[in-house]
Image (cartoon, rainbow, N blue to C red):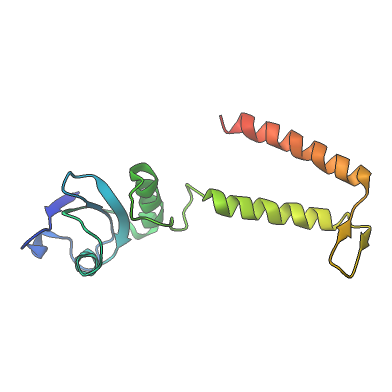
Length: 151
């Protein structure tokens, strides 16, 4: 793990070499994490951040295996809740709520489309009251199970 003050002049030779995979954090003057990222060339990446609108005073990094970069970055983003991170990388640990909602909505829509008994030219579709009631009851059961699992 490394830590370096980057305001003013700093010794870039203290940073990992190109091709060293790492997850890094940008910190403000109070050493609060404002951004978490990953890079295989941290020197170039930090200079890129310095030339952007990111205002930071310190950089901290940890070397890691290439295959672990996405999971470690995601973990860092979630733990730090940095103000400049907007999205998570694809990872095995977390899914965004928005993406989860979209996937669930698509699956429900696909399921309901199999129940359609009439579809008009105005794009209105209808299912039987029996299928509606069954769908609502199943949804309630699923939500109860999900709430119990997520505690």
